[in-house]
Amino acid sequence: MPLSPLSERNDFSAVIIRTDFTDEAAWRRVTAQLESSSHHHRDLRKHYVVIDSPELAHADTDTILTALSTRKDLNGRISVVFVADSATMRAAHHALLAIRTLTRKDLGDDTHEVVVGFGREFRTVPGAVNEIHANLQLANMNFEDFSSVAREDSEGVFRAELSTAD
View (cartoon, rainbow, N blue to C red):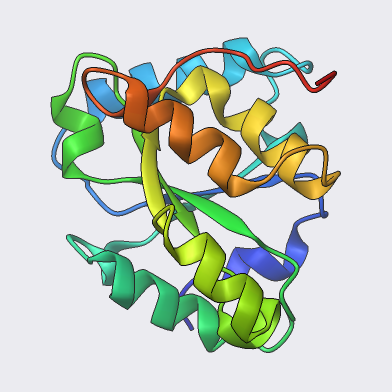
């Protein structure tokens, strides 16, 4: 079954789904950036679940969301996943694709319509993954807070730490 390690994650572990396997050196740079941004340096597993998904190689957002939706054990517990795709491996900043996983069923019709206006995905540098995931899990911030900042970036990438004290 695709994405099987997800059942082993805790709620505060961000999910990184690797869908591109063409550049091992680039992947090592991505994981190094993830590790250096973690409070548990050198132990990627404390904050992240990394899933190598050859079955999702070159998958688009809809395919990834479909694979996630088949997981009944998640029950809306994952609001965002981060995808290491071909764009991640090619770009100098190695920005991952952050994908909102909550659907109309999870959010309700009115809320879903509002949040869809902000999009269901944006790019983020690996060093910001923990910040994004933790703030979403704690409901300090929402997906739109991060995606709107990414939209303002010249390359469409979330790069900076945001203050949660607003």
